[in-house]
Image (cartoon, rainbow, N blue to C red; front, side, top):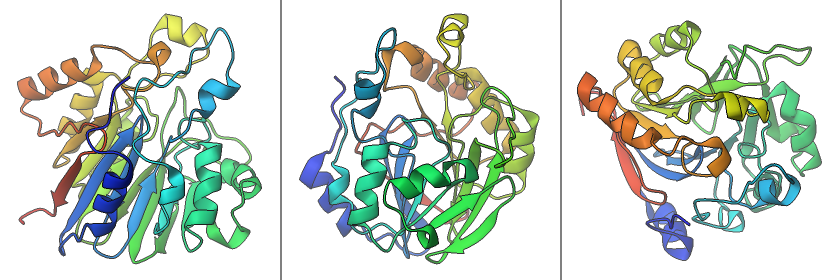
Length: 285
């Protein structure tokens, strides 16, 4: 079991006491694709997987025991302004976590693909708190700008309810985060990233394999593809994710390969242990 660097009450206190200055934001990685971001005006939670729900509901031949311990209990997250879920896979839209957040942060909004709205409603979120998004959705919430864009996982799926897999820009006009959820490498993502000045790009690196595909796991970009995406998109800093949760759906060498590829390409990156705070600053700060 990978232990968080900071966890429990200590992490909750750190989040509550953080006071990012104008032109900065504080980021904590929570494992898998989960990030918590404190802007000066708002607190955002993206793709939180803070339970053991996957293990509880997915039987053999799947093994969804956590490799990384959850750094906090969602019942302690009572001051959120925005929750983002990139798609409806259980490690990104985690029912026990999302249900708790509906109660503990009653003023928060939640943004997700349209196809997720019914499930989110069943988890206790009132309709007026649910932002149903699609490719190109633009919104303002809690003083932040939010924009979603379609990503492929494995393909650009589109149904009557729109694109089920989305990437996200969220920022306060000074610092902008881009979060890709689950995504393959694709020129459309490069184009989307080129449309914004991105201070921190959160990108999956677990890749894919024929064995995982045969089990039904949709693939993501691998370590080298993630570095090439960052390089071609000219983002300021790249954070790898989605490499530390389920033994059946990771590449155990992904993080080392990502760091090696980034070093060889002179691509600025940051790797965060779960629970460690990192401050992102706007360009020129």
